[in-house]
Each structure stands twice: as C-alpha cells, then as structure tokens.
Image 1 (cartoon, helix red, strand yellow):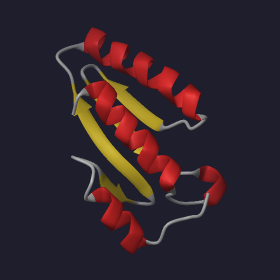
Image 2 (cartoon, helix red, strand yellow):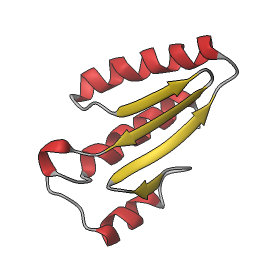
Image 3 (cartoon, helix red, strand yellow):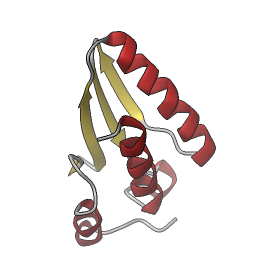
Image 4 (cartoon, helix red, strand yellow):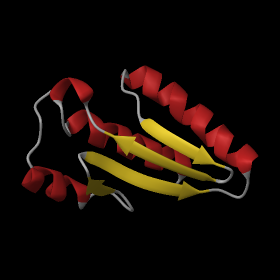
Length: 94
C-alpha cells in the first residue's frame, strides 16, 4: 500500500462522517448507550479487522470508543485505513 499525502487524505475524508486526520492517524470517537453495547461493537469490529488483516489502535472508557487508524507498514495513511473506517461506520451505523 502506498502512503497518501495530506491532500489525498483530506479528499478521502470527505466521504466519511465524523473521522478526522490528526497526529498521523484517522480518528473517530463513538458514543454508545452503555459498556455492553460498546463492547459488542468492539467485538464486531474486531472480527472485521481480522478479515481485512488491519488492526486499529483503540481506547474504550465505559460507553466511549476512540479508534485511531494508520498503516504501520507504510508509516502513514493508506487506502487500507479508509476501507476499514468505512467498514467500521457500517458496523456502528454511523
């Protein structure tokens, strides 16, 4: 995968809702009704990550989930990150 430049990243962000580019990562924070719903979403996302062979940095506190994506092998953002972000949005219906 080829690393995207900032212009390419910003153009691709236009197709996503709620994601931003900061400190080298695509980032989004999700809010759920409670911990159980958050953990269920994380489990579903984990299975999708395994299918795509791409794994996020994430942090969960009660009903909040922050996901940060980048492609470590490319040392930046690639199409792989946008593909996973879109899948995560479908899973979370956001």
